[in-house]
Structure formats: C-alpha cells, structure tokens
Amino acid sequence: MPPRPCPPIPALPARWAFPAHPRSVACARRAVLDALPRTHHPHLGDDLQLLTSELVTNAVRHGTRPTEDHLVELLLWPADGHYWLAVSDPGPGTPTPATPGAPGAVACGGRGLLLVDSLAAAWAVVPRRTRGKAVVAGLRLPAR
Image (cartoon, rainbow, N blue to C red; front, side, top):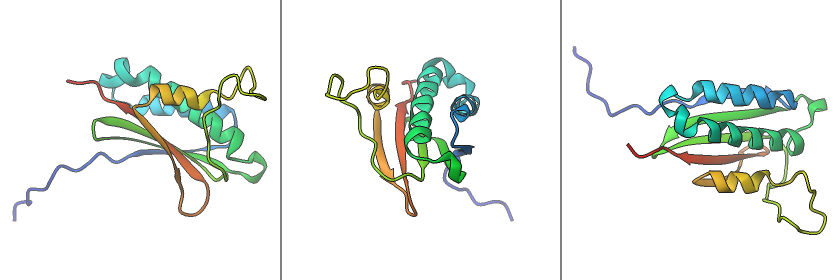
C-alpha cells in the first residue's frame, strides 16, 4: 500500500535546558546559533544571539535559584514567517521593561527587555502551566 499524502509537517522546535548559571548564557547563545539554518545567519544570527543573551540572562538573574538546581529552558522554532525563541524559568513575577531615567534605575542594567522590544517583531510573557513563565520573542524572517 503506498503512503497517503500528508500535509506539510511543521518543523519540530529545538529544545535545550541549561543550569541557572551565568556560564549558561554563552552556551545558550551558541546552541541557538548552531540550530539556526546557515541561510538565515546573515539576517537573523546576530539578533537571535542578542535576544538569547538578554532573555537567558534575565531568567538566570531573576527567575531561578542556582542553590535549588533550577534550569532555564529554551525553545527555538520557525512558524508564521518568524523564528520564535521562548526562554522559560520557574520564577514568579512578570518581567517588565525598565523605564530609562526612572528613580532607582540602575545605570548599567535593567534595559534588556527594552532591547528585546526593539529587536523582536513581537514578544510576550506567557505563564507556564505548573509554575514560572516563558518570555517568547519572534524575529521576522526576511522576505524572499
């Protein structure tokens, strides 16, 4: 019996889990770039690495406790004309962009989500079913 025709099968997301440690930021950046098809490196590689750095750094700093063996999880997948990156952590709270110049703003930090907002075509914070949240950001694929 010949195989039945099927609709196009979507690409499965690439998935990683890293320890909640600052060293994981470089590992995550490298893993995501390696998973991105080479044809997209010139258009998306730098921005994707920068998004990965910002989101993983935030997850490690604010959403995990290394003393509790927490993990930061990443997903990367193409869909709807974008490459989507989701970075999840078990921490409570909702990340919000800092307001530059606001009272108490730290001069050398707190602007990562402003950078995410400027790079990503869309981004959101999505609660996880069990605990924690995922920050999902999409980079638009270049027009062909």
